[in-house]
Length: 357
Image (cartoon, rainbow, N blue to C red; front, top):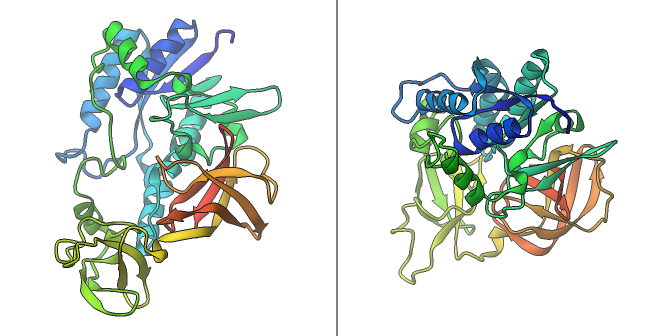
């Protein structure tokens, strides 16, 4: 690739830092940008924005590039956080990181970078973008333990065409080694976990700030009451911990799991046993579909994940109409959760997916 003007999204973490260094070593004109996407509680003990921005600035100094701080908090609140709250209120379990990539990192940031005259934006994601003459393809990262293609499935061709992900062909151990060798100040900084605007804070405490608590009964599918829930929004399908039903066990030692939510009755349905039939699904329906390339054909053999870090599962789309698709799996999938994403693959290529209904 000839020299290009590339703006790198720098979070203060080691991945985006090494991304900037790699592109600079390749001879490109590299600039950094630190995105502030949240400002409701910057002084909170759980908020790391100040520390992260300091790290990003220190890294830019070592790499030898300029860096700007840009505030996308309004766009984030309007496009990501409002959706997050709406989904929880409706009893679903959304994945805000998926929306953040599509709406902020590869929309608001991309638009800003193009205004600044950038040819490409770059991020520290562990995924690969292969630019062909007439199409750009999104592939899994080569490090299976770090692959992030699941969170990127909503990217469109116009976004993929202007994006680079240099770490997609590397393993995390290699990235850490480079960071140490070139003396990056954040070489040993731990990876961030959890949802970006929640950070390490207790999830229930955070949700309680924005949505009213509505406790109600926990019942078995047969209608026997076995406990009280604190509010349906605090639970997700397949959840085992934190149910508070006799230490999550009965006398026979079989653990309880969340199997369903009855919104009309404000009731949490719980079952005993990891492989209870209510926790297993051979098919699902998804809406709000999004494809990185042309949509696949009905009946084409594919694989899919219904949650991050899950093994790819063999499946086929059995119907696609009115903006929804029905997907059938060869083997039953565990705790398929409304609001989460089903992400489809053709081999190592991420071709898109949708929101589980």
